[in-house]
Image 1 (cartoon, rainbow, N blue to C red):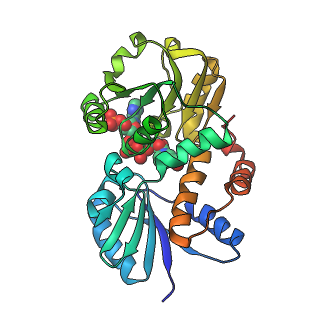
Image 2: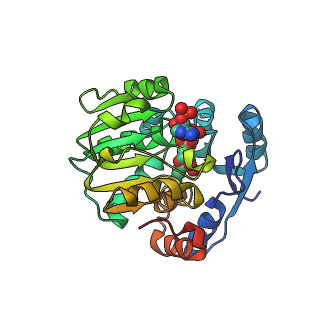
Length: 280
Ligand code: NDP
């Protein structure tokens, strides 16, 4: 039976993952059967069973299924447990092994592609959804000085910070207090607000001179936050396209045992559509 791979999400039609995994496979001199599967959270477990029955051996998981994927996995890596969310599932004899490559993907994009030193930075993380859960532990491990998590629904940020279990460095604040919590050297937008509306209004007082702004979204969804960042005089305003390619590379390596060269794939995606040219 052909080994099958897929990305599960809802909606998922926009996902670039099939294109990225097929490009990595071409680099390795092979092809990959990698498709999109749109499934709502209630049907995800059944869909995963059907996928395994049809030869499914590897799956990426995107919004809004990452926390459900963590529950469905029969085992999880340490970083998936710390995130409480899974974006990579690998079939084994016991079921599905869960991992979370989002944080490693972000850190690799920032430190290797953009040559940024994250150590000692004061970080503001906006959002406490699946993506924020994935990147927060990796940022702490990368040696940042401190992280304040702010989410529209504050209880979610509180729970996330509790789970991080690093009270010296990680804390939460209310969204309404953004104007009074000081300034930051790295501001990360891990919300999906940009998908709903174009504008992104934050106080300019959050911006330390020469700060770095990162939106985990890319394309049109990143335009509003990155426009705010440039108006606030960010030294770098980076979208999530590089992270997307890097987290995919981590999954690809787990499944196929080969580390892809991400630069040509990133360059091709960046060049392929004007709407994606929102990074620095
Ligand atoms: P979730 O649905 O899990 O979480 C959404 C988050 O956005 C929550 O914190 C939510 O707050 C917040 N939010 C939604 N609307 C608003 C709003 N109008 N104002 C303020 N906050 C809002 O999504 P994910 O965490 O999985 O994804 C978040 C973004 O990150 C998406 O745009 C996604 O595309 C991107 N992403 C990019 C990746 C990459 O590789 N580049 C990987 C993963 C995600 P609340 O809890 O209060 O509802």
